[in-house]
Structure formats: C-alpha cells, structure tokens
Length: 405
Image (cartoon, rainbow, N blue to C red):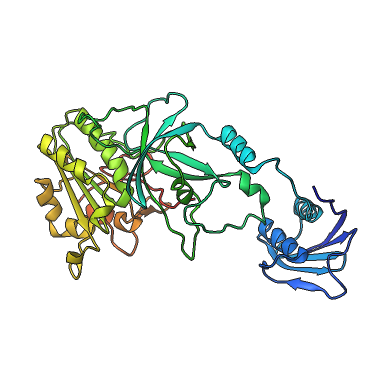
C-alpha cells in the first residue's frame, strides 16, 4: 500500500481548498473543466473526484494545493469524501493472487450454478441455472435477477474504466430476466411448473455510443458448471391471474420477450386450457427464434395453440415489413386467433420493445396517455380493452422492465 497524503480541507460556499503535505505539480497550475483521460497523478486525481461527485465544475491543482469548484455549496460530507479521495491517491492494494482473489469473490457472492447452455447462435443462448437451495413457488411470467461480478471477463473486450471508483471492481452487474420455459422437456412432455433448473432466454447486448452493457458480455464468457448469482425473489404482476379457462389468450412479443410468454403457454397447457392460445413473435431474422422447432411440435399436439413468427430483415421483408401493430390494425391477428379480438373473454399479453407495447402513462387525475408513436396497447384500448394499472387488473398486460443495468 502506497503512502497516504495528509490533507487539510476548508470550503467557502461552492469552492473547497485542500492543502496537501506534498506537491502534485510544479509552479504552473493544471486546470481541468471536465474529467481528463490521461494517467498523470493530477489527471488521475481530477478524474476520481469527478467520478465521485457529479456536481463538479472545475479542479485546479497547483503544487500542494487542490482547489475544487462545484455547482452546489460544499457540505461536510462532500468535503470529507473528496479529502478521502485525495488522501488515497497513491494507495494501492496487492492481492496475493488475482485468481485466488476473484475465486473468493465468487464464493462470497454466487449462489447458483449454470446447469446447461443451448447456444442457439453466437449472440443468443437458452441457459438453465440450478440454485444452491430449493426455491419457493413462483408464477409463470414472473422475473428475477441474474448477476455476475464486475471482476469477470467480457466477451466483447470493451475496456471499462474503474479508476474513478476502484471499489466497483468488487461489485455485481445485475439485470432482470423473465423466467422462460421450453414448454416441452427433452422427453417431449410438458415442462414442469417448478423445475429444479430455471431457464432464461438471453441475447448478448452490444455496446453503443450511449451505453456499455455490464452483464450479458460477461454471461457469454461462461460455461456449464460455472457459478452465477440468481436472486431467490421472483416478482412481477405479468402473470395469468384473472385468466379463465375458456378465455382466448394472445401473447405478443419481440425478441427475447418470448420468454415469459412461453412459460405462461406451458402453464395454460398444463391446466388443459380450453380457449384459443395464440403466440406471435416478431424478430429481425428467423435465426433469432431459439424455440422455433419446438413450437411446431407443440402446435401439432394442441389444436387450440398457434405459434406465428414474423420477421423484419429477411430478404423477403424488403419493402414489405410487417410489425405486430400492423397485424392488429389489418385484422390478421384475429385471423390467426380464429376469433374476434373481443375484450369480453380475451386477454392480451405484451412483452418486448416498448415501441411495440406503446407504454401508457396515467396523470394525477387517472387519465391515460399514450406515446406519440402508436403501440398495441393504444390500439386495444380503442377497441374497449382495459389496461393493467396499479392494482386494477385489466385484460391487457405488459412487463415494464427493459434496459440492462
């Protein structure tokens, strides 16, 4: 561990001055008005200060004096945190062995094992995870949290900057995932309601200019028998509650939004549901459907079940793209269902891209508002359907989480 810096801190409104027991620069000041990218001691210090306080507007370092301005006045807590960062500028910790250190973090944080991976293609997996302890009952359609440590390697080789917060390396990257289901198991029988291995449908999220995904690039470095964290809490109101045996059920999804739909489909078939069940999935390419082969088997076995896949980027889609909203407006969805889209006796479940769902909002007076781009929820609302809201159970249901965190 490097020698700590002795710091005396004072503040005057929006400006704080830190006097150090050693010099960080010569007699020319170094002034930063945004987080720098270099690796000199002044640049590292400025970057760490910015990483801990989003209110900073400038950092000036002259010899043994650090002057920091922020948009809001300094509080004692802010001052102490900044002083601590300066104190530990040169501190470093030597792990006895990185491999042993990371293994100890896995042992302390992980509570499940990857039992199986079906690699549908390089960016789409169906994964089964076995918890260390039996789980309590959960409902088809609900979701839980998966996590891996930030110390785990990434499949996309993106370089993450942990320098502003070295402790981040010991934390966990988390994301919510709906429980999926293969509907039928490897023996051709209906999947169990409460399996020992919990199935998840996972696509690797690529980095873009706005966000670097934290979890999926780490998942895609894993293999069978590797350890992982899975929350023991399953939650969500996106379930079959309120669906009667004779109701028609329509599942509409994009991409891996198919996951909870398949779990609920399996549950309906286990119940010997008598109404029509339609499952429509929209993807870019047919290769993005990891359950396609299985769905044809289920269709043949259950006459009241129908599975439809539509694509948007196959060659035949050029100039003729069809989205789920188009199916509703054109009447094709009713043709697929074999029955009218009647709010009396029909439940519609929406999962996937928020643009498809058209996520509504309610104002303080309870009035519903839809986004400018029309989604399925608004189209159904215009037909007399009722949309789930808080504790009021309707006949249009949707799951609200979407982004990776």
